[in-house]
Image (cartoon, rainbow, N blue to C red):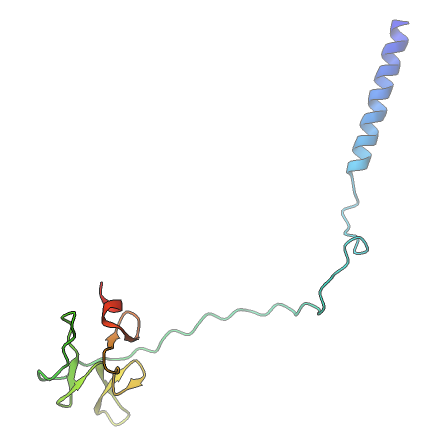
Length: 129
């Protein structure tokens, strides 16, 4: 009787093991009927992301003279063509120096300074180290 109980017990365990293994196995295929797409548009093919362009290298000149503007934080502007400039001297197409702050012709407006680190006109306190 002991052998019969043991045989039945082993058989039940093997059958339970077989069912548990067969239920956990799937074919590995995705069934779209179970999870249909809910997007209103089709996905676009992947496009390559281009890196941003490096800013063009600009040669900056500090000019000559002592006419550059003075800022409250102790910083000073430059003197380009004997005129105060809140920016730097940049050569134009003919080779003449003109006041410019990274594309801002004539330099920065009143109360702004030309930041080399940020490559733009900023408030003086935003350019301090």
